[in-house]
Length: 146
Image (tube, rainbow, N blue to C red):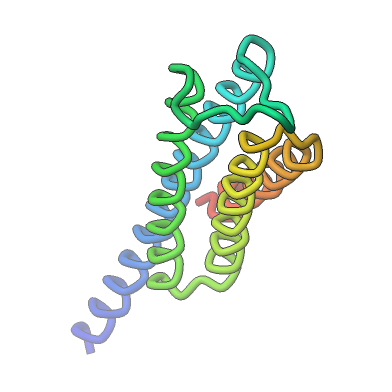
């Protein structure tokens, strides 16, 4: 009988540990998204804006290069978050992690469109997709609170 209780307690502790790690990774993603937003704003204010006649390369300035590199790191972190959420079998976390990843990818594709021709719609798409991703991970921080 005590083995059953010990196994059940270990399962509860393991699940709580997984959810705590998911909460911390959500906090990391929020931090990365905020840094990404700040880099985008710095480039928007002080960088060379692309036009329909002249595109801007992804690595044309140090700020834009860090912005692009951070995008790839965000994708990796969001994929890992989704894998952990799926493994934890926590429905809300899995859904919000998936939507957050889709938002990050959408912002990246909008960014590619923006550096190609400076389209204002692509810039708006980046900011809206960023907001969706940020909201997903912030909700997870609060939803996974101990």
